[in-house]
Image (cartoon, rainbow, N blue to C red; front, side, top):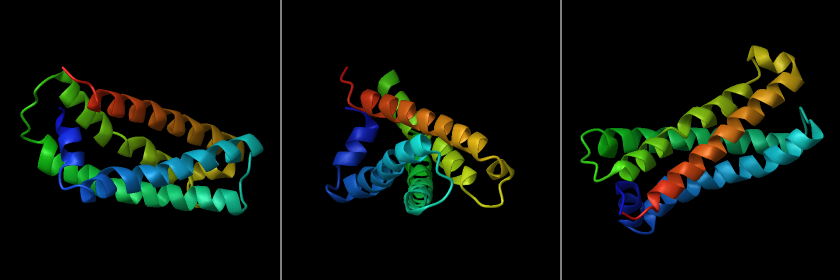
Length: 144
């Protein structure tokens, strides 16, 4: 069992909520609304607002999660196998695309002046988030 999976299932259900369900729940809401925003090429409206707010909440919460995991579990960890290291590292690195998506939604960012470019960059960060999430969860469940 990997350290990430042990952490998530220990102190159940609180660790499941704090480290997994809440940040990825808001990330999923952001991802689902992202598909509609990209398809319709929306730059404003209620769906875009839900997308932005859920993305900001997800990024802010995951900042705390990544800090906790990095300081308490990743540094000084004794890795049992490569999947153990890979699951924790890719889960922590989910912060990068989440922050990227949140930053592209800020009103004073220069990229917002060209909506098509902002949507393309946002879609790229969304793709990276999905790939890293798949790798993190897949390696977290790997049994050696």
